[in-house]
Length: 108
Length: 470
Image 1 (cartoon, one colour):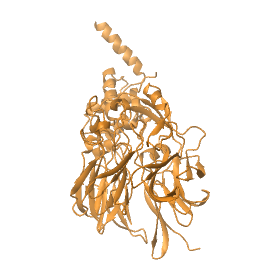
Image 2 (cartoon, chains in turn blue, yellow):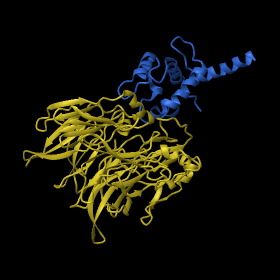
Image 3 (cartoon, chains in turn purple, red):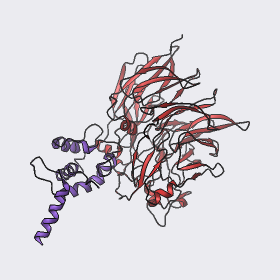
Image 4 (cartoon, chains in turn green, blue):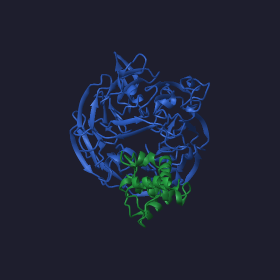
């Protein structure tokens, strides 16, 4: 059973591809999944379903991957037309969103 | 001169451009979560008896002292956390301040409010979606979707028109919600996508015309209705002319709401025509195909980008800036979350390769005959059109030019490049015997911003030009 779980996780991580943190460690699949769900609820209206074809806002597929601090800051406090989310999303939620943005959507 | 945007209200010396006062708009920044395209403002500053009226993005309406910019009263009209937002200029009609709402792509139920302009006391509220048991409620699927009407859209997010002779206020209502009709059982869903004629003292609905029953393509009927008199079959009729987002230019009898004409002014593929006897559009197979899960390209996504049209009684022509901008869309499931988007579709919008993005155009409103059109290859225009008695048209371009066109043929007679996009309709007026033209420059708005992306600088400015006697 332990072996099976590990292999499923390994597959998920392989799908995440280049989804690596600054530390070089890949994001956990659970964290990416949580970020994806939060994205669908709060972000996709403006930034586009599954990160693609944003209706109004920035294309997050182009957000600089070395700029996690700015991502967290912008989501928390807002900037210009980007609203603040600090009273809705907890820091670990925003980390999950970052994981999802970096991991991206799997190519179909 | 008074200027509003989402974040400020300005008083400006009309002769010199000097700022007399400016007052910041106080709003909860969290409201930008439902605003989706920033704190923008549609329509002018509304001024009446020493007060200036405006909305705030977090769903308040307020009055400022025109002399000082100090707040006199402020009323919350809805909870932005439920999806409501304020983007539209109120209007004064028969002494009543009439104010709409926006948020028709979120979980909202549309309404129009009447206020006492002196005190801010609410006099009436007219919901654009009837509650169960009220007239029109039979057009909602109460048995199978009992809550659909509560979040059914019908937002009143564009400017109204008032006819003092008939004492009627004309205001359009927005798309039905979700766009995906599965969640409304494909019902007509009154009074979404409709033109309403209201009595401003009471909010009584005198007539309505639903241009898009069972709106399934985000066809807001909110474009401002232009009031005119037209000779129809030898008789002068009081009409309203509406360049609908759905691609048809409607002429309605504004005494009773009956359609007189409805002609396409852009490519339309969702309906073949409008049946003037029933007032209903005759659909093509596009909706059926979309309902079966097909991704469809809907022409148009918008006939204009929610901008003002003009009419010159001398030429009998309507002048407008059209968009060639279909919506590639697919119906999808959606999860109801109060205060968030509730469209039930996924879509993208782009101009077909090699085709003009839009046109400056002139059209006969009763026949639909195009007198002329000028293709715009880079970007369609997101500014309103102003026709003068002297045969000129003034409008603007997303690339920043304010332009004067010849009403006879659309030829550009003059242009001046401002520092950012011209999205607003130019205005003209006389001051101390000279005629002036003023236009606001400043990239903004949802679709316009998205179309030009970063190719045009941001930044707001007010430009005034004098029309020289020679």
